[in-house]
Amino acid sequence: MPFSAESYFQTQTPPTTLQHDTDAVREFVQRQTRDGKKIVLVTSGGTTVPLELNVVRYLDNFSAGTRGATSAEYFLSAGYAVIFMHRQFSLQPFSRHYSHSTNPFLDFLEVEPPSPSDPDAVPRISVIKENREFLLRVLAAYRDAHSKGTLLTLTFVTINDYLFLLRAVSEQMASLGRRSMYYLAAAVSDFFLPTQRLSEHKIQSGKGSLQIEMDQVPKILKPLVSEWTREGFVVSFKLETDPKLLIPKARMALERYGHHVVIGNDLARRKFEVLFVSRVPRTVIDAGQSPTGPPIDSTIIEPVTDAPPTQSGADYTETWLILEEKDRNSVEIEEGIVDRLVKMHDAWIEAGPRIP
Ligand code: PMT
Image 1 (cartoon, rainbow, N blue to C red):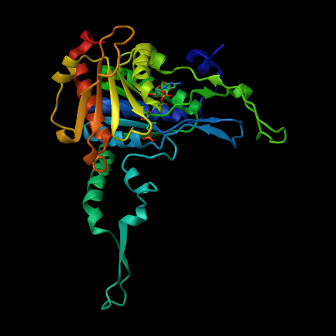
Image 2 (spheres, rainbow, N blue to C red):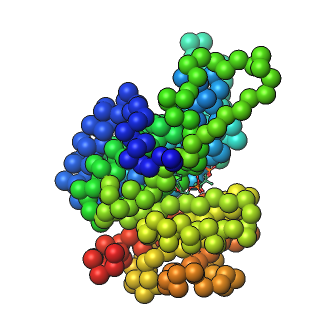
Image 3 (cartoon, rainbow, N blue to C red):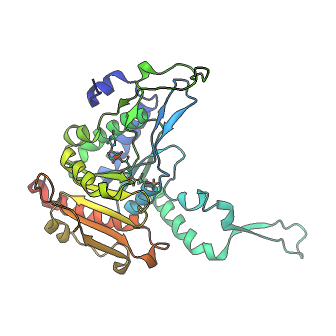
């Protein structure tokens, strides 16, 4: 029998940090509610599946955390409070600009030699001139989030941590009703080994080949949408490597789980091209237009034309968001994604129960 979400939570062991994290989220939600903030939960990075209880080996899911960390910054600048639930050591908002291997921190710095006229002077470290403006902007946004307390960071490693934490966070956010958004960018394992079948110690290699039968991870979007947070605005991601599958799989996800938006991305093109499939009608999206977002000439929003009608005949808004070639090194596509979602979310809040 495959695990349902219910049987999963009944039989698997919650992480030891769950109560502590739940308390932090409760306090955060209460404070942001008092301040009249909308809250977005951003999940980011990949989950692991341990193969042993005393874990030496594990399976991992691909994700550096770029999508989540970058989007979290744009949500903060759009006025949201952000719960950033990420894989330990994956990219984080703000520090992503200088801690990644492509952007080493030390490369931002230079040493100014001491003045020869002052025998007691020591060398000074400063930021290289051409990086100052950029780092000042990052620093200002970072300080702003910290002084206002609008960013709460939570950590997961395993699929088990992720599932228990996601349920706990969404239950705490349920009180926000329509003012909550779920931006599920984490790359979540599809298969796992239940604790009861895990080898206690390191699997020995003496027997030659290794055969492991894994169980399917319950599809967590279903209870998220229908039980844990009935009124939240839920955005999921669909990652594919075969471009032909992207449109049908994104539609299928929306039909299956009944949430609000699926963002489809092809692994090789995800940094400059994404597909929006949404249940929010076009008229409602257009009504919520705002003047923010990347310069209008840096993104192309194109209706999807190369796909047959949906199987259910449901009326979806389907568009591509594509960065122009000339902007691909200077504009982050997450700015456009977040801008569009904020408009949809606002319009959807405004529309009220008329649009479920
Ligand atoms: O971090 P980067 O390197 O920038 O990469 C970003 C990304 C490509 C990982 C990201 O944009 C992305 O596509 N994330 C979702 C990848 C994924 O796991 O897709 P999926 O088909 O397995 O899951 C689809 C959705 O269902 C996801 O929103 C996931 O959170 C959710 N899910 C998945 C499995 C499961 N058991 N329960 C779920 O709720």
